[in-house]
Image (tube, rainbow, N blue to C red; front, side):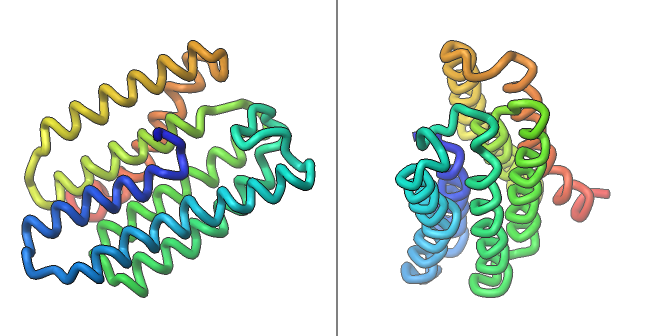
Length: 196
């Protein structure tokens, strides 16, 4: 449920719910295209590519516990996220704030790919941190504060941190740094554009 590749889809679902509340006449086809397109580009295609890598023996599991096996799946995911940025900006024509969040998520994935060569930073926490950063960006943009949603994401984040530590998948520093990386990449660009 909290798999990193699902976070953009969760973010798009939350945004479309908010948009429907603000614009009741928003076409259902547009909402479905936004959510399904995001899911296909950021989750389905990368997971299928990982499954192919698993069948070929390039990776040993879909969870990619071995840090040395992560580069190829991450590069494939980066390519998919690049197409997602195009989809968000050119096809959906979402506001600039969304394009900046998509680019920020892609940059976070790029940073995780690079950092992974030396240090096993948590991709799970980077993804959920990016989701929270995106929610905070939207909240600032629309000058609303979805307090309960932010609290829910913070609780899920803490549970995910605990799970990653309990599984000995990462150190405390790796989960905290991953979380901060995701938040910074999706929040700071919008903060700069809209509030500096």
